[in-house]
Image 1 (tube, rainbow over the protein chains, first blue to last red):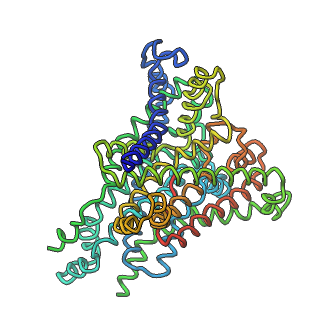
Image 2: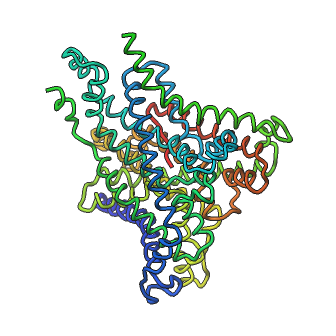
Length: 268
Length: 272
């Protein structure tokens, strides 16, 4: 009987924590669709605020989508080969490089952004382009791509697979293309989702890196929270939720442990 | 084999060049600019010697410590519970608890405003109950609430992953030797989860020290280091001071994570 009480206590606690996280999300979604949040839902439902956001902040949405996709392309090109090398050569040097590579995640975005500004801020063509923000996003997301691919590559017997292919006459590049890349596709996929999600929501750096012509979605959100009525801020948040929710659900699905079938499947 | 090494270097080169050009070089420059202001290299000591900066350092560390403690307690209880008891709806609870995983700091700030702001739920409820409207979103308590909100999802995931690997036989052994549930928690479960607590706690702490979006959304008046740096940079145009402070801040968060990694013996990566 005592056990049951403990169970209910813990369940109740967990439900309260859930409410703490979910209730504000629901409130905000409601506020974005209500005519007047102060009056309440009786004032009626409307898409007016969402349309207002769409008209006023459309550009930020497109910029964020474009940025996150560009960020994905760059992290793939830089990150996947790097992860392969780190998996293949596990020396003190490569470990130190891995350590370094993670630093932009450990160091606050504010510091990284300031460092970029004091170094490259005077190149005005670069400073005012969205490429400046892209550099920041790549720094911040690259470790996630590298780690995610590295995790998969460390879990499979890369050496045997490659030796097998080499003994059959496959050169370096065919091996990389036909053996390594297909084997780490789950890591690439998980890393890609992470990169896009993080880039879409990055604010700490972007707030300092952006210019009036390169406002991303989170920058627009901060603008709206500070200067517009609560309903508009909420509607804008709703748009943001709609954009990242599919990514998040996909991430949650991928976070589930997968059966380690890769080795067997590929070495048969 | 020689050939192979050259190819590996070639593969690592793009990431290396990018990293050197856009992180190592800028960080080095930031370090020197930090020492180039009116006070010279003393700017790096200002965080300790200047009363204003020192007080914001203390409040930053204070809110980060409180966030870490609260998040670990909450996520520890719920994480172990959800890992141990599989009941209908368990998956839905986990999904809800990890939903805010990718919310940026600004959005978290807005969530705090929805709860504890001028038109927030807590204000409405307290007004109905006591006639007094409780509004604390725009203060240090609001910031604390936001950081806890931010940290719960990722901490719960870490705790659940660690709890899965705990050996239930140890707990049974303790119970059969007559240990109370409370003693089992203290002597078996918490020590077993220690590495996860250390690494997740370090991430909570580092995020709360370095995050900027939540404080920015809530109020410019909140006296924490990232806000001070931002003000120095934009309003006072004191770039040297902003550089010195942010360099110190970067060192602090990096050290916290590095120490935690050695202590926990596993990989620690911050996010957000």
